[in-house]
Image (tube, rainbow, N blue to C red; front, top):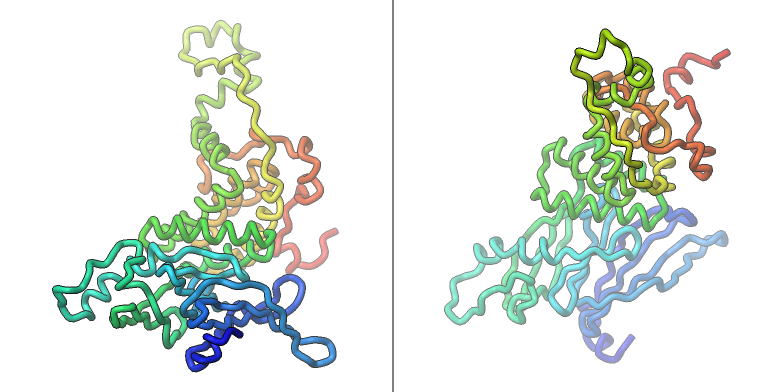
Length: 370
């Protein structure tokens, strides 16, 4: 500890956050903020086998104040950090950084204007929150997603930073994929979802939240091209031109006077790269979540929303799973899904991860099958 921090020890704060099993050990992160040194030290605390506590420094971040809050996840605290530059940063998923300045200080402008007395000498507040008169100097009294923010000019406001989805299905999808995906991919999915959701003004409409989740998943796993192909391939009349019956009956006299579907182009389609290797575990995870929800009568409307996503992913790597869900939700897609995208036999790294018949919870409940 520096001499400056020692002299101003009354302002040193300790925040407990991200208490969970990280895949290796149960641990708790401690953020020790020293405003005089403009630093927050991140420590990891674990319980050793000899009943002692082990403390390890895992990171350091510039900060003038810090507060543990429920921001990104509904059941785990994150650390909100006010940097010396005036930016607000969230430490989440361990010590991964997420910039909250654009919704932090900018979003708080109306609150500060309403709580401040008019002053002709006050400088206008800049949109990036970096104005020397209006940067954050203290975060106080955090309770769940609410915190009191103090600016350099003495303005104080109570506000809320809550980026946790309110839709139960969206929240469960993020949680189950957090247990399925590698840590970096899980963090990427979460922040991509948050960015998309923020662009929709954090709408609490369940349909909007789930669409934002699907958009984030499509982005990180590169599913958009397949979604566009499926949207183009919804006309049964056009698909008839690709059938063997169409070619076999080309010379039929009875059909010569009828209008037939347009012949498919002989030009070879551009080669499509292999599906993302994480599609298989994602399909498994979402399928098991869907099976769990399917047993709850009061959540059958959510099964229909989830089945559409499962069918799209299944159509890429295992079309048989789409057939399974089409039998529960016949109108989840416009037609029967067929394996037109990529044969799983060509993708050996996926074939051993996705079995042909999907697991059925009702089969388990009815006992062993002969």
